[in-house]
Length: 454
Image (cartoon, rainbow, N blue to C red):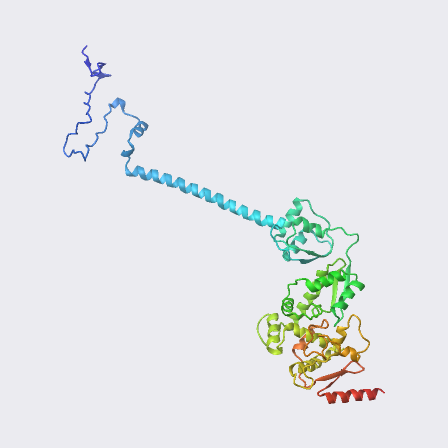
């Protein structure tokens, strides 16, 4: 049998499985240049596709693995790029979703945690009143409505999971938003030896702060003098009239809240704090001012804006000066039907300092305020000559502050006095007053009254 020997000296079959084998293609050395038209160093000859016998065609996988990376056409590159881009977008969406969800969870954890544990909340004192049979759920709603907590539902849920459902004690309490849920529950569930009782307190018209404190402590056993006076002089109540008062307060004023503890009947719990007691009177004062001036037609705005407008444009006074004037009106007559006439006399004296009264109010009521700790039986010459800013015979104009706590009616007449030309008045035996335009007329009427009484 004929054989053919290759360069390596090994014998190769002329055919495989009966098929003739093609002669081997001679190998081109590195120095040989391809033949054919257009072949040049800068344009290498196109490479022929490899030829495979029919029986040895490679599989698709083999073809794919044998393709040079530079032989991939543009369509294949597009598919690969889109696949990579799609994976990147999915990864970004996944990461953003995780961040968003984490952000929401973190936000609610911070907000709810701050409400439960009161990490960063106000120290403002807030008065809360609860009645009989108040439940934890209802307490949460009361606390939310008053700005102590943000989420009443969370408060109720927290109490349930903590198994805190104590019997709450009816009464008035002072709490702050800086108290956590556990502290709040303890405050309203504090144990007392006896049930808090309702105390009905009546403050008469024209009482001074001193007289009001004496009634609260001595008659009704509410709070203490020290606590009440500390609140009256120092506590920062959030009322528009208190802010105006503090901005313009005279250093000679004897009592800060004189004039604003509204005379009325109040219902307190026996365990009410000093803040609660005084705040209820101030709140009532604000309500009475709203009811009195909200329907004034002379200007637009809220009742506070209307009051400020009247004070500035009509009266040329501050609101505290109006209350000051009203407190004197309140004390100079027993009958409210005379408020308008008394106001006319005092306004005439204030607005016409060149008249014979010289701008002095000359009111006896201011002397009794000076000596309220030891009221005189009569106004002697020594008392009338006392050197005190509240002596309205010695110092012109209004005293440094109100001398009593007036009603809304006296305040209304301080702004809207009757129209008269009277500058004098004196009290008669029946408690009403006699009015005069001049000092001479005034003295003659007093003389006639004395003669008639003999």
